[in-house]
Image (cartoon, rainbow, N blue to C red):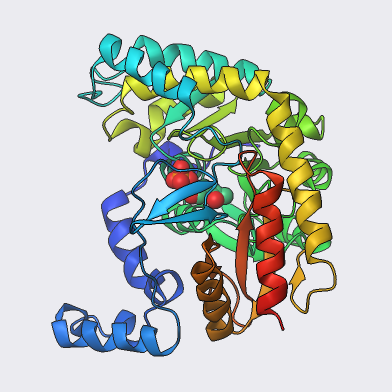
Length: 425
Ligand SMILES: Cc1ncc(COP(=O)(O)O)c(C=O)c1O
């Protein structure tokens, strides 16, 4: 296992970014002809037409505006909803103890970080949070990033570059895919959870530095990656393994310590990444691993180096959040009870839940228009469940991403099940 050649030699980032966006236009942006017509993208009428096309295909997304804190019960455009729409899996985003911790933190640390970490934006609150996070997930050290997208871009591009190879699950999160493209390493994808295919790719690669990249819990399917097999392959082929535990941290493992500890695996090849804007209820992300890995990221992860630090008051708030995650096992128990209730309540429905044991419970509808109609029908009944459509998921697999939280009460789950039974008729 080596640190990639481009990482050592220094990646020509600006050229890389320009090239990547041109190259990745159709794959990442999915705006059809616009991505190909470099000059037409500048024209307002072309944008108008492309937006119209998205509308006609049922692919135009709209933002809805919350007028209340995030949670299981929210106010949207003046109307109350039971929400199954966020990643606030433990119900911490609007939690009183976290609000009070933030109030205290803002008096201690002020509002902004004011500079990047390596200049003058690294605070005691960051240091303490990093140490606490590392200990919590059983790793030597940790590094805090402003969000998960930046963490993934930073890690991948710091470890591999031209001449290296990345092996990525087909259903990985977009931020991982973007990171892989940006790295300029050879970017190979294997069918979802297909360990034989991954083994074949690892077997035949001539690359010296290899990086396997996978979500630990898949964000749109809710299934857990085959962690033991991934670690075994990383060990066998001397590859790094980056595990993105955005949806497992706080939810899985003893006291919510995450997917790695849930599977009781440890390997020097594993790089653990998790986000802090989901179950932790705040914002940010971290990468954990050996002290050398973290020091290398401090030196080379550009999305760590060239950006203003996360406000230290948020780091201080996150210390409190970590305390609640560890302390409140009842939140995970309640979450599991709600998941079981949901599954029982939707049994026999014409739409099927994917086999997921996590807080992400996707109900496959299929057609984009149908998914929108169901989501709108639920909305009329005061229930908010987002419809997820291509390009986020594969064509023909539009779905409702039902996101369950510890903040839901049995009556919330009941209402959703009754409404879906009604709409399925
Ligand atoms: C698997 C996964 N990784 C990374 C991210 C990005 O994290 P963040 O929202 O903190 O940028 C997300 C979701 O946003 C995600 O679902």
